[in-house]
Length: 420
Image (cartoon, rainbow, N blue to C red; front, side, top):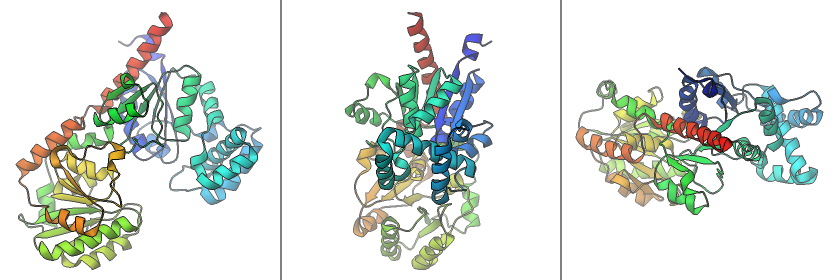
């Protein structure tokens, strides 16, 4: 039976949407199951994801006071242009977030300085320290759990330090760039290669724990269930000896997409047994995918209805840009062909060199050569590669438990310090 002392410990989680909140939700559920009091500030699309997971997220409108007339005025002005109904739960939340953050920016930089910073950086200029102080005053947390992001997440780490409350930060896949500052007391990283990069940036190596990333735990889970890939390939008339490449598109057409399609146009005449499943981004126009298929011809077909895990499992190779989908494919042992405009993956510390799981192309000729090396592989080869990559990325279905253990240890360390 849990002690009353454990039950009384309150953990405050702060997160934006997308992959950030999806990393935290399994951790929060586990901590809640262990008896901890969980409070969550869910920003932008995080609120909907948290509600779907059974939590009751707080937002900036919950700390907006009657006397905040400046914030209401600024928020209403900014929301006219910046409110995105598909990302924020309500117009009221947008007004509160934008208004309180902008007024805080004025308090930090003055009226002219705030205007200049916002014109240059938009919302990236925000570091809402005073709004975050309101949350801490209200909720009185014993612990902070957040991820690497500027604005509210970084502000929450600063206020936790100010209040001498321990903080745990969870690093996402692309969180190793210098602008993703994460000065938390304890930092959870997805793979060991991240440790040297962060220590070079000044973080204490003793504060870093390699935990894996909960966003990838579905890969481990899918391996334990019965595969539907063979049936999917038959349904889409993919022959057993054909090489199926899944092309995962970005939301908008840009030079990276043109690089991929131009490379495919070059290689398809040389590889008659290659098929391309064109998967549009869920936030993009289907017309972009239609245009790609018209350029690639009979080898290509639209794949916009298949659940992503099944689509990856059914393919032999994944073609994309800088994306977490590429890592997910590698974790399942698939070949990956990455395309971008420069060789900057090293800034993320992503271990591309391990187990020969990917190629990386920045021009059409490199892309043609990389695609020419894709081949039909046996399930045994895929299983072996996937096992090695999953081991390197700590993808075993227990990433959320390891992160939760860091949180619990941080609370225990704080308690021992108080006793001492």
